[in-house]
Amino acid sequence: MDKGYKRPTMRSRELRLNATDAERKLWAQLSARKVAGVRFNRQFPVGPFICDFVSRTAKLIVEVDGGQHAVDVAKDASRTAFLQSQGYRVIRFWNNDVLERIEGVVGEIERVIANMPSPSPSRKREGDS
Image (cartoon, rainbow, N blue to C red; front, side, top):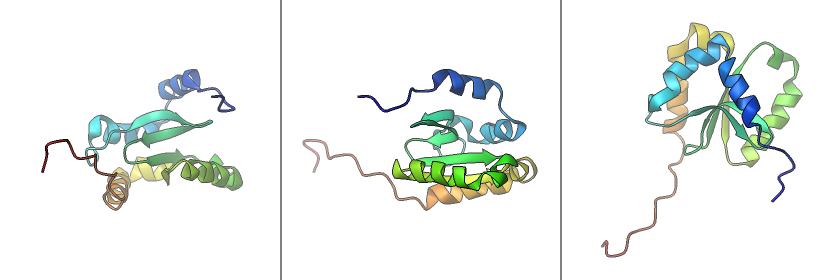
């Protein structure tokens, strides 16, 4: 099936190797299921976009934005609309919030995860009553 785009694996790798200070600081908090036991991937492709941090099981995307995002609001809005159409919730933080208030950022991510509906329970095994 042709999705109309190619999976940007090489670009994802490049972005991981050249992460911003804010992305590195937040990754140190999110890696290894440190936040609410949820697994995140960094610089992960969703459709034609590469997202900063993605939890596929929680259907949550965390974006860390620099000053350029204040200028191109319409582009971010259409990107967010696409990601939401794929079933993801998108939350955004400014670089300076991550760098200066990491505890508050992590607390907000934990709050969002706690308030998300839990995934559908797996089907019942045969023989279980």
